[in-house]
Amino acid sequence: MKRLNLLFTIALMVLTMLASAAPVQAAGELARITQRGELRIGYVPSPPGTAKDPRSGELTGFYVDIARNIADQMGVEPVFIETTWANFVAGLQSDQFDVSIAATFATVKRAMAVDFTRPLFYLGSVAMVGKDDTRFDSIEQMNDPSVRIAVIQGTAAEDFVRRSIPEAQLVSLATGNLTAGFMEVVSGRADVSFEDAFTASQFAAQQPSVKVLFADDPVFFLPIAWTVKQGNAELKSVFDIALQDLLMSGQLDRIVGAYLEGGRFVDQPNLRDFPASL
Image 1 (tube, one colour):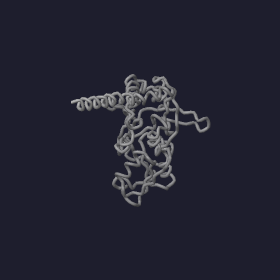
Image 2 (cartoon, rainbow, N blue to C red):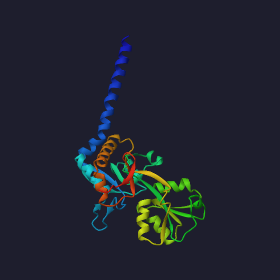
Image 3 (cartoon, rainbow, N blue to C red):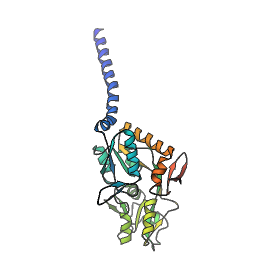
Image 4 (cartoon, rainbow, N blue to C red):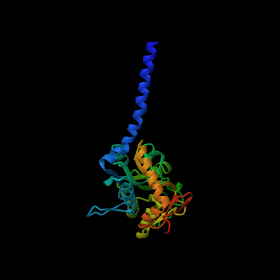
């Protein structure tokens, strides 16, 4: 009987220790940021969301403004750390930064490595080809070994091409410049490039030698979100609440509207053009 009582007591102590340890571990996620007094923010230069002045290094853009707004609400200083599309996941996993504000398409493959915030908005992707190229009316026509498709390494466009157009020649570019694939089309080194509809339309407006395909019916339509290290539930919750508050209060429209007009969508509660005219 004494032995049973002793085993019961030991088991109860172990369970008590485990129950008390979980909140302490969870609390450490935000406690470290608060104690440090800094929110480390990974970013990939991608105007107009995030733009870096090549001479001064100054950062501007609506992602930057939103991140600063949230850091201010948290009572900490924002510290911005440059990364790339190919490396931002590794940066989160190795604790180089706490959150990535790279405008990331939320995909299953990425969700297996990072946790996504609630969507900032939704965006479709399209194809870019030479202005006089009449070969392609569908994705299926691109699925040929003679077709060269340029995409940015680590992007949802690269994943889409690998899965949906496997027979084509994939030209994977290790850069953070989302227009690099379009430049491959301009130079003749690629036949097609895929990227988000906004970036493509902006580029085509400045470059008369190319045209956009599937503008009225994007090849895939995904949420754009920010990311935190997988399992960092407390920080994710803070960003989810902050982004929801900014959206519902209209502040997100005002912040983003200072840099662009429409072309994206938010679910509030149904898809609507974003940012709205104020």
